[in-house]
Image: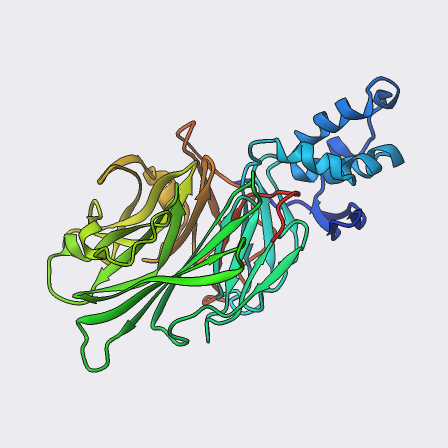
Length: 405
């Protein structure tokens, strides 16, 4: 891992008229970018061509471009530029690492430039809130009453407070997911609530609640009582299907402690049996995490020892093909050791072609490129562990300018 570099202030407040406002942020010092280009591109390129070129830059480079001259500022602040930017298929996802167990503060890692940025997240009040992301939008829900719900864009700071979701106000477990469409700019939010039936440990009430940004309304298409299984806090929407993990409440072998349930959001049937869609996990897992990588369901999980399933002996990555899991990667031992003292819990998050993995006990961040099958450490996060019980966690999101709730 590379050493920590000094920080410098970068980029003034940046405004897109009538649409979005960009707050200033700091980045790691970069000697190569201190001097402005001497090539007089202003005299060579017409506005429409320059707009297309700038739209393909990483987000942080677009911020820098707005500081070059008045013409560039006006270009990247225009509505037409946002349209050009929307035609760029994807930006490499950033990873936001919380550096406090209570305050929602931290740094965002940009894998394109291998730099950390100090940014403020809108709406969120503590770092233990539920978080889900899709196509530049981030959905957050409070961890107490689970009735405060927001959708925001972390880059533009645009946000919207959603109406309180229906169903049980105080559920034992809740899983949050969001799916956004960059063509229609619409999005759906899904919450899977699970609560123990009073006096019966083996039976759990489970309900699915769906919010549609087009109608701005919630629906509860399905409620069901599960026997021997309960919901958890892990879900994702992938190619129109809601996936969520369920957990055994007793009995069964080590291999059957977890399972995957699917629910088709297109049909939104209220008569299907969720347990009939059950897909077993590939092995005894701890800290299973679901993620959407280019509309394919991917799961990251800690592989438990046969005799001690709660002790991690490695971390694997699987992709779901039909109803079968296919292992696509396993963390090399040298990286597994690189985390130092690895607890039986860890954070992982991914989208597009990147998966981020970090230990709760340290700010070290490991990145896996699914397309290139390559593991690498991120640039060192500019934070140090101040006390033994300090915890670190985070989530990834795609930095977009045009997406708004």
